[in-house]
Image (cartoon, rainbow, N blue to C red):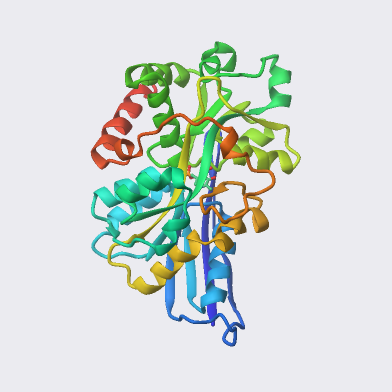
Length: 356
Ligand code: PLP
């Protein structure tokens, strides 16, 4: 059986964009005689997790089920745009990962195929209500908490004390030292927006973002672009905490801080694209992503420490313990509405225009 993996990874640094468009691996695998091989055919995955996780998970799935699997990786908002523009001629079957809200917005726009996986029964009970409300189109497969990432060496060099709160980042000392992801293309950026709205109320959240804009060096295209923080190109990044653990592990002087105002979070999701040509394999893939086996691959094989949602999956030893974190409430139904997200993203664009 043949597996072919196509990756598209973009990295962004101050004032310029470096883009890697690579065919990562395309080879013959000898799994034809695997005792697990029960399915066949093809599957195309739009993937919004880390590139290496996309690679490992699709590879395991291909081997296990004897399905010719390829993936294309991009950030959550970008994939949503792609699915929308391909509505009349879908180019992929299933969407793996990325933040929940854009998946909900896709459902809201009629871009998804209905599928309620039987494995939803193993999702953490705290999300039962959400799954009852939206589980006919979406399954949640991991959890990530939002924090402030700092480069401790860069802060020391600049003589700036470590921030403890989002509000500390408004200090003019941080001018041109902060990056966060553009919420129009990045699920992380949108999650920052929803967190601020839940913490401060909408008016104050946008007042805050307008002021923060004065200190922002760049809006990255993905919350996964933590490399600029690691190298000290910026001193501060706002994204999910597990990314900072990974940078630390690689030896960078990076530290994640949970903001004093409260801990925002989002859920990683998966959904099937309407008009999927390989519908049965797409369903099989969603079931696979909900399994403990697939949910442990990110930390076992890809140094990625998002928290599994399956109660039987073992979390990474380095992952934060969700029972010890007090998350704020996020109204996913509100922020997953297509109309509401359009309104908020336009408001964000106004608040961060160059001439503010
Ligand atoms: N999924 C995982 C596992 C992530 O770590 C992140 C961001 O850090 C995202 C999804 C969201 O990515 P993006 O901001 O590119 O939409």
